[in-house]
Amino acid sequence: MTKWRVAGINFDHMHMGDLLRMVDQHPDAEIVGLYDRSRDRMAQAIADFALPDSAVFTDLDTCVRTAKPDLAIVCAATAEHADHVEALARHNIHVLVEKPFAASVSDARRMIDAMAATGRQMAINWPLAWYRSHNTCKRLIDEGAIGDLIEVHFYDGNRGPLFHLADKVEVTPEEVERQKPDSWWYKKSAGGGSLLDYLGYGATLGTWYMNGEAPLEVTCVVDETPGIEVDQHSITICRYKTGLSKLETRWGTLTDPWTIQPQPKCGFVVVGSDGSISSYDYDDFVTLQTRDRPEPVAVPADELAAGRTNPVEYVLGCIERNEEVSGPLSPALCLTGQRIVDTAYLSARQKRTLELIP
View 1: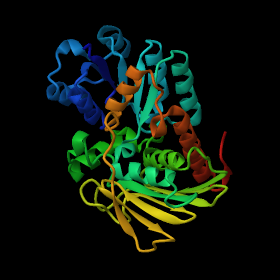
View 2 (view 1 turned 60 degrees about the vertical axis):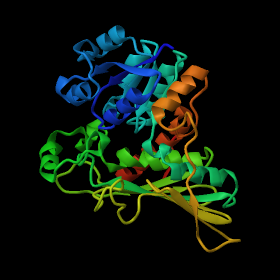
View 3 (view 1 turned 30 degrees about the vertical axis):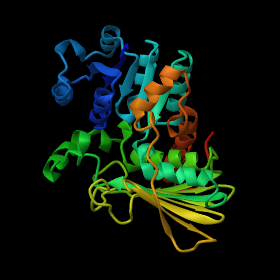
View 4 (view 1 turned 90 degrees about the vertical axis):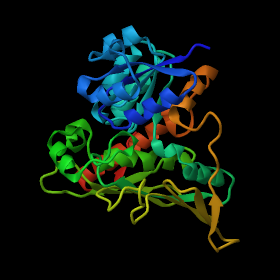
């Protein structure tokens, strides 16, 4: 069987290493090219996957023309997502964009329009979408276990974006401080800050839980740390027809949730007309409480379905079946999430409640 040809495009985001490993482990896929402006930033991936020099590029168009990938994985800085997708669309290939979706709604629409003209797939990967607990939460909501969904509460973050590399390899605090002045994560112009890093998770998966419903109004406040131009803490209130939801992002937790869950715990609590569910990152269960059974019950998390265990496997399966990407990876659903993010960003700047932007 012919293998799917996959290229890794831009190493700004540390998740590139994780995504390339998924390609490497897929029985019907192979890494055929890497691109970044800096060869040094690709060095670890070159070594990890034993890639020849002929598969390594510092020019994007040359990479795509030479490697001829079926799918490009984009891990650029958020502010560069639209430019990268438009460039890749000209080569008529499928694209998987690592979160967040875009720097703005206008950029998101540019990406959607560019890919629509090709007839190829675009998917946006949110790592939380692959947690068994959050998928089980969605199943229980859809089954009516808590009645009509009224509220989504989200809290998530980590110690900071520079404390880990691919595969969650630790970075020392001294190295973090050394990197901060030059890191795109700490530059407004590049799309840095905890709000743009994490709010898309809550807004997108929250919209998924809400079956696509969008809020009417958004109110957001962010911290203002002297000497740092981006936020490290944001709280967003979304007013829906049914009630209020709260989405909170944080850089600066005491621990990272993949090692020890901080307090508050990272994840979701959803409230319905007849009950509630708590679904935390990395847990192998969710906790269900209902009017009929007020004593909270631990529900084991479902196993992820075959073909839907990670973003690479899922997107390649959709391409093979000529099936549109759905759920939280869908550009249409992610666009609603991006509208929430943009409105929250403007609300924080203007220090007032705003109607959801179109």
